[in-house]
Image: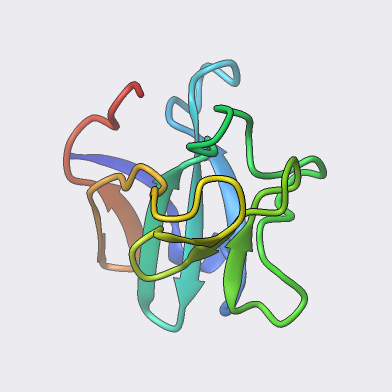
Length: 115
């Protein structure tokens, strides 16, 4: 298990991107979405074209903060499971990264998948 970030580094009700390896900013990126003391972690890669979801750093959520949005094609993803609800990849899903919250830290349970 490895530490990804402190939970309080992600605003409650918000999302933020992080490199998987803090020492290597070119490492694959992940998205951490926070709701209270819960966090979901996904690869920052749209299943449609493989592009990052954000054009502007850390802009992952719709205006109401209810869904993740792909800035490239407008695909809409459910936060709780990454399922694409609308857009060119409807029915596909973001790649989830197994993580837990322990002692105020978001901790990866295993290495993130490369796809």
